[in-house]
Length: 166
Image (tube, rainbow, N blue to C red):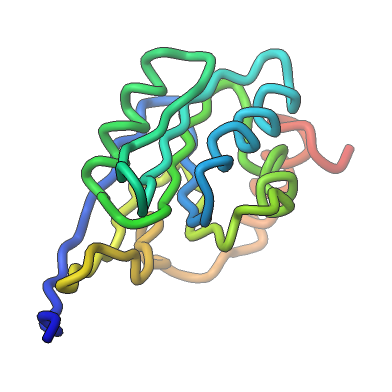
């Protein structure tokens, strides 16, 4: 009879300054090639690294990207997670909003847990069979409700600084 006890762990993922991370789950080794294609064709300025935890066969961490430092950190994050079919994407010079829908449309992608530049903690559980992701803690809790000045600041950030909704 298989061991049915669970062990829980909070795994903090490394996100370099000026980068964003996307954490998701997929189901097939082809994920690496398909995610690479989505990312490399999204913007000529985008730098990225990705890693994927294979959950059958040789059970390797598969990797790719166009920035060696980000590939290395994505692999380190994947190894910390060691959760079946989890993928980690680190990106620089771009934002998840530009690639998230395309990533969700990749046939192998089952879900996206987070897309953020905030500190990211992942709640991982381990059973007798392996490890899985239960959820994430993305950033920090609210400190209040925005005021009229905060609304103006938010709109200025979106329109004038980031360039959305001109």
